[in-house]
Length: 84
Image (cartoon, rainbow, N blue to C red; front, side, top):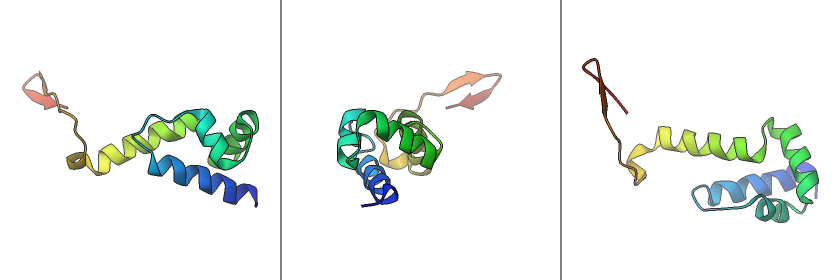
C-alpha cells in the first residue's frame, strides 16, 4: 500500500469520527504508520499537523452545516450589532 493510500485511510477515519474524541495514536494506528512517522508524512502531504487539520475540518463543517450541530449561538450586542 502506498503512502497516499495510507494517508487517505487516515483522513477517511478522521472524517468519519470528526466530532468524536479521537487520539493521535488511533489515527496513526489506522494508517499503519508509527506515531512519529505518521506525523511527518501527514505534515508533508497535507501541509498541517493532524491537530491543525482536524480543527480546520471541524470549523469548516460547522461553517457549512450549522443547523446540524447542537451548539447554542450566543449573541453579543456590541454597538447595536449582534455577533455570534
